[in-house]
Image (cartoon, rainbow, N blue to C red):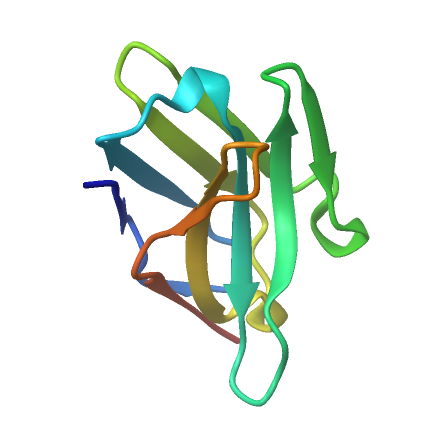
Length: 116
């Protein structure tokens, strides 16, 4: 059974930093495209950052230069380093794994709240 478990969400002041983690079990991260998504209240879920084919990273424009996605295949863990946080970054953050064969896996989410 595949499980993705996010952690690291918290309440932080604007300008602060957080590092989110997503640990996978029953799944091999190295053969999946991985990503972080977020959903704010009343808004659609959006992709924040992703690692494609283990090499290419992409970011939504609003987080470029502030967020960094990375992964540790040995630990089967995905990370999202978030710096210079803004109130508009407040959302539930989700980890996603795509096996590139039509199956997507999601974690339960972790809450990030940035106060002004």
